[in-house]
Image 1 (cartoon, rainbow, N blue to C red):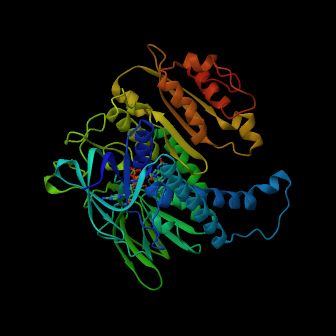
Image 2: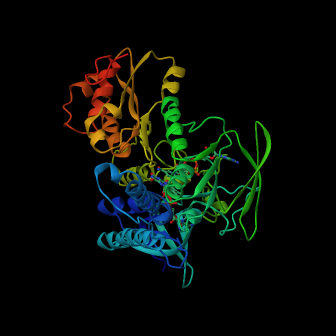
Image 3: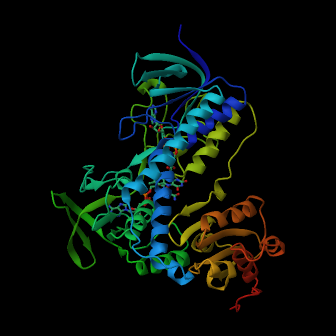
Length: 475
Ligand code: FAD
Ligand code: NAI
């Protein structure tokens, strides 16, 4: 007799494993299937986020930033050091330890929540049956009352610059370099491109970024993007906009990259090339043809606002469905799907999902950009406050950047908050909470912020919206 579960989740990334835990909390008998295989052949739960995305990239960003600050900033504090050097093997070992601890933690959480963690491939068949092919062992067909598909995404490969895993790599490969390349090419100035360029640039690589679009960080507020590109260029990143890569040929020495820009055909030789031109939903072998699951033009699994797929009782969450490819978006969708399956009321406010780019300065935003508000036709007002006028930023020696708030003129509602500066990824939570509660700038203005703190820059920006900032001359 086949094993049967209330819920089977396929994929144990941040969308899937969180859905499994929530469903177990709600009393369901849950299995979660995952096939992730690490470079050393070991299996681990956690998906892209824990194994090859959010966590390892942030580990390297932290190490490289500390190295950079030790070299360039500690002297200003009077800290005298000599012979500062980076041990890449030790840096990578620290990263691997963090990843192992966190992925092991998921296995522990599965055990504690009595979730059946199954290692291998899952495939949805017709009638909510799931074919499970273990990494070792026999194929088994499982029964489920409900299924959640959480199969994630995979890097997009360029036909003109195919990955070879050695010279031309994706984001995962770029997290695993065992030495600092002297020269590094990066195709795509998106989030991956900027974070990984920052890592290797800080450690000494000469980095050139080739971005096809003419606009830098097209999804961000223009004022913030303009400030960001200025800081990144100052850090030594060579950012070429409007550069279309036409070929990349790897040899024993490196990679010859040809691209076209407004001045014609160009060639650049680099030791390694990272291709970071976006990700696509990963649904290979995920469902049988007759399972009834529909996908859209982008290859994402079609779902409604509450993540119900075209098959009754089958939900899909995370990177494999529409919306931003962010871990926290996937996790909240996982919780929503589990709650709905248990008969609870659940919804997700897609208008207030924060985005963070973990560069230095960090960039974070929530809600609409000024350009989006302008295009909507709603009258608006803006306020900005520079970190250069914030006491905490000054003592932290991190005064680059600003907070910008966009609010409606009619009822003062906060429509968007954009931050470039120290700890922007932490600061943005105040704005997310404010917007979740439909706060006005007056609410932010009347909220007491601790002194000295970086959050005072948010307070001051909210005051600046009404031209009443206290520690800056209002324009
Ligand atoms: P995934 O994490 O991709 O997990 C899907 C899992 O399903 C995988 O383990 C896969 O092996 C498994 N799977 C797929 N198909 C099957 C099948 N048929 N059978 C069994 N198992 C299957 N997001 C952030 O919010 N913050 C960040 O700082 C951040 N940094 C990133 C840095 C990098 C370099 C990259 C590449 C991404 C980053 N992201 C970040 C994005 C984030 O990693 C994804 O949004 C997130 O992992 C999506 O979660 P998911 O659960 O939908 O999919
Ligand atoms: P992206 O969509 O952020 O950026 C891709 C960039 O490549 C774009 O600027 C695009 O114009 C450019 N591009 C596309 N085709 C090109 C070509 N042929 N030549 C040159 N440039 C080209 O995608 P990215 O950076 O790969 O990241 C994928 C996703 O992973 C992100 O969108 C994000 O959702 C997630 N992520 C999130 C992070 C975070 O939250 N801090 C960190 C890293 C990734």
